[in-house]
Image 1 (cartoon, helix red, strand yellow):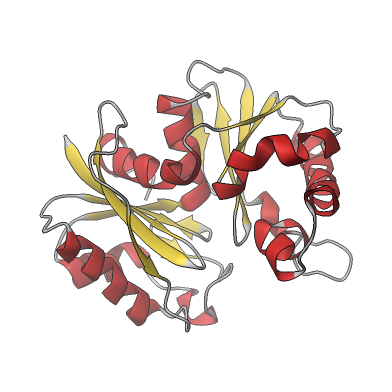
Image 2 (tube, helix red, strand yellow):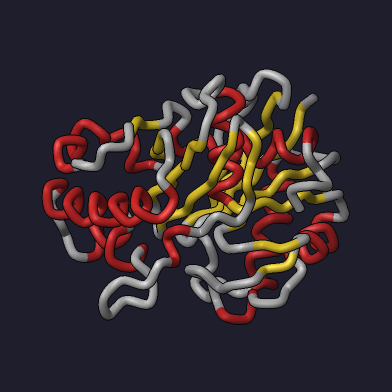
Length: 250
């Protein structure tokens, strides 16, 4: 089944048509910058533009960069505070006129990786970390998703959340070398290891493709591997979730 997957980030909103059976992207990724305000209505308009770009009519899977409960945004994350309390599923469905399944973006990336990528067949407790504007995280027990596992929200020193200090955006904003940033990211992974003791950590997001640049600075005992799907994982996982788990995940 061909499904439109949309991955919403703090800097860009991307979509593509996906084969929900094989996980293959059937089109090139179409990207529109996230509106500067990061408010609900302007972002809903971008979702509609992505749908119109593909001339698409059908179910939509959408990865969203904050904690969700039954489709409702529970924290602003890296978006505007007006998102809190908004039913994201209803907003995007009204904007597009199509059925929308909404899932946390890191959960979507993890879902793709566990079903189509390096996580396939991995049992035990697996944590997926997406490295981007923030630090998203998805958790899986024997391949089954444990939703809304937001480890990037852990407070750290003077920061309200550790992702402010250790995400890829911090590397870019502060012009950090891979060594400087890698040591910060390793501290985040140390917290993950202490708090949840995973059997495996999989890294996703654009920075995962540069894993060789910073892998030597990761010193935790838990095995850490990059996800081969990289930036496409969020789109693929969102599309697949819309077909396979449209009720349980939103």
